[in-house]
Image 1 (tube, helix red, strand yellow):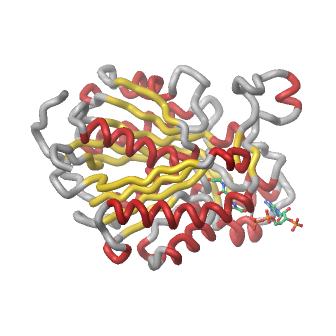
Image 2 (image 1 turned 180 degrees about the vertical axis):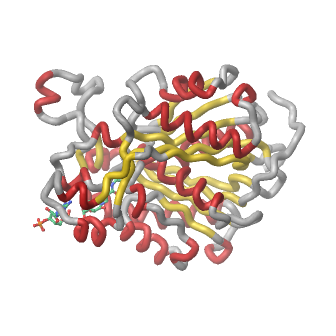
Length: 340
Ligand code: UT7
């Protein structure tokens, strides 16, 4: 559209806590095996935040690295959006805590909750502020400490999740580059496929809710699995079409990392060779809103993204939500637009 300022990623960063929890460690905690976890999910190990380390700490570390990568001072950041389902607290927003920790005192800040699709949702929102000329430097963070809402006695969920954070800086980029299109969706009738019942206005935190384990993730794995493959394919195809591209134009896919079988099935439906799909689920498990920005940062630093590549980001998660975005990769910023 005429007059729209293209928004692209000019810096990426990620942070994973040091502590590694392997499948063999989990064998000692619940009735499971490395073999079951590897073959059913593709996960070998995951990272766990240290005692006292919160989502804002992980998010701030990833954000600092993204700003350093872009060569931008924190004081120049105008907006911070943090996608998370594990905020430090119900309020204030984790984005405000990140703002303070990184010294981005001139930035507006808010959180966005769209489950594992949260990062792509946040990218779309952040890009909008650049497209319309409102801001020139928007930090988008996906950060999670899922280990704190995981029931470590429930083998059906505790083997899946991990902690980590990824961040990107969005800035105006040259015409034809950056976020070309997004496809966002939700279906609230699937809200009970993955949710955390306790601690909100419906079931406020009480002795009883804690006794019933309502402060832990509840999940219907098989239900999610079936819908995930379908929505990842559909959302990707719609975003690719909106970007004016064809499937064969796609150079690289960065999918949400929930299960290697979901990733492989989606790649197959999109007719993409696994060489062109980024996978790190083996090392980190599912880190919800952080999976895509962590993968993006790793792919960039490993030299797997080239100038001009058409990159599809796609995720699904609690809500149920889904989101796909198509980026034409370039880290060159475009100077000189006026602010609104
Ligand atoms: O970001 C979005 C969030 N989550 C997802 O996207 C999850 C999507 N779903 C999945 O990834 C898979 O459904 C799971 C990995 C969660 C489960 O794999 P599955 O192939 O669907 O297994 P299942 O739930 O059908 O369970 C098969 C068996 C059951 O035993 P029986 O009833 O056949 O005797 C489970 O009790 O595997 C058992 N099982 C386990 N066994 C060893 C479940 N968890 C474990 C475990 N270790 N950790």
